Image 1 (cartoon, rainbow, N blue to C red):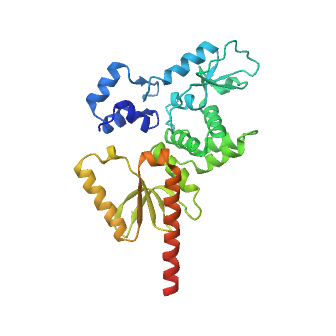
Image 2 (image 1 turned 90 degrees about the vertical axis):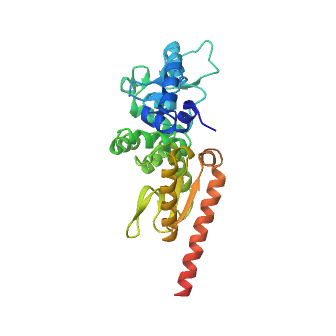
Image 3 (image 1 turned 120 degrees about the vertical axis):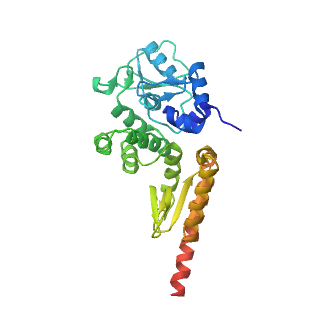
Amino acid sequence: MVESVGEVLERLGGTATRRELVAATSRSAVDRATTSGDLLRLARGRWALPAVDDALKAAHALSGTVSHSSAALLHGWAVKAVPTKPHVTVPRNRKLVDPATDLSIHRADLLPADREGLLTSPARTLLDCLRTLPFDEALAVADSALRDGFGSANLTSVTDGARGPGSARARRVAGFADARAANPFESVLRAIALDVPGLDVEAQVEIWEPEFLGRVDLADRRLRIGLEADSFEWHGGRDQLASDCRRYNGLVVHGWLVLRFSWEDVMFHPGEVRRTLDAAVAERAQRTCRRCSAA
């Protein structure tokens, strides 16, 4: 079944360039979505779902500031999941006569440097997300910010200076953030892998044995385990599928264990992904022991 532009945009983390959307669907499909208002153009030359604009309207109505993952989207950063309720921050002493149940209200006394118009600044947005979101969601935002040019040194500076609840969590996310992750799908898969004892993965690894065999989304070089965030739409036709088959076969022939994970399993069934990774690490450990015994 062919996915709509909106569905593809959700998979890409709620924001994407026109080129990314055309590659995953078609030029005509993107044109139709743009004309019909199914896409919202961001100032940063990216596209988002129209619901992202609801956060701006809510912030204006409350004299508040769009924050957290809603602000991340408006900064052009991808997220694991588009928030169902817009995030808006209001001053701590602000009395809301009729608190909206369709909003996620946060209370904080923001400094002028913490705001950019109706949004929290990039630095404040990152800190809010890294403090409060689950690790996998926070990592997806941090990876995207780095891809967008925020800078790893800036990220470290922001989190090193943080104090209070969630500061240690923010520093942990910053320590693992990596601009090489292509999208939230890969970021969330890496977040699961980082929690597996004995597995040490890095993003976008080129494999040479000694000739170039290909690049894998995540790899543990010591255990020779490769992980692929496998989206059907990215095969790009028969030629790309044939190239992928040759790459996978070459890796396996040279002793690599290549594991392929669907978007649905990574996003909605992380426990199953974790069990598979645990089993893979155990299998590699047993293989190493057998080799040691034979020697």
